[in-house]
Image 1 (cartoon, rainbow, N blue to C red):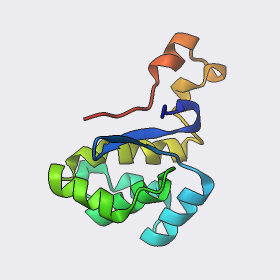
Image 2: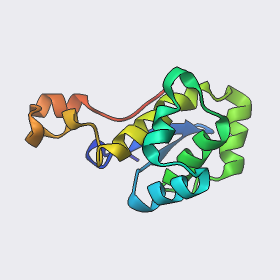
Image 3: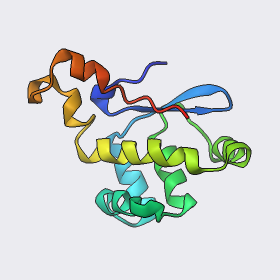
Length: 125
């Protein structure tokens, strides 16, 4: 699988397998309903890493394009801790707020084609 930065996709690796996360309308509605906060407030709670694991996992699971399960994510968190999830979850939220990828990834908004390529949204840790 390959992420599509123009769609705001982010990749994480769970159990050695790349999983694509996409901030679709349905995903955003789902995580806002489950967490009980708007996306902007969820993203704001990442400042100072002042966020619980539950909302992070809800954002990740809501945006999974291939049915990543809570058990699979939980097993990976048990193996690796959960700090590795901060960056991809935050990037996913930012991409949701920007209507896809960051504006640097949209050549029509002033970035060159090279800058758009550099805006690859894959996060590996």
